[in-house]
Length: 203
Image 1 (cartoon, rainbow, N blue to C red):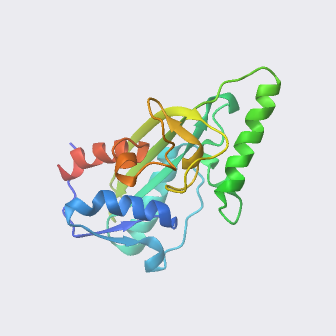
Image 2: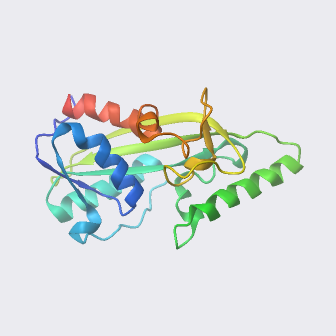
């Protein structure tokens, strides 16, 4: 049995405004006050894990212990099959120190163009989100969601964040960058991990 969440306040262990906003919107129906780690002056821990789950746990635990409150962390990224899983857990690093995802998307496209020149036309990709809910005593609950699709170029849409404008989910005609937030929330990797979290800890 997963541990139930009974607090009124939850720290979002992220310094990414888009991610904080999206998680805040997902948490809204549960009457929980959401506080970003940045607002509490909590530092970003170094992500030394080798999986999405390990990095989510590391971030959630760091915030929960520092804030003495439960904390929710997400580690997510884009896994591109033709690039042997890159950028994967390094998805944010591909955006450079300024976190410019226009740069990151271009890097992915250039890498894919190199594969295409070698005869590999595979543009399949999927987003992964690992969500960890951690308590100050060190207990954690971790959930993983995925959404599969393909990459388009040039990027389309100004909504979402990260690699959203170049990701077209299976069966969809709009990229995550073009979708209304509600439509994306209904099917995204983060939403799928979140549903498991809610069923286990809030349901």
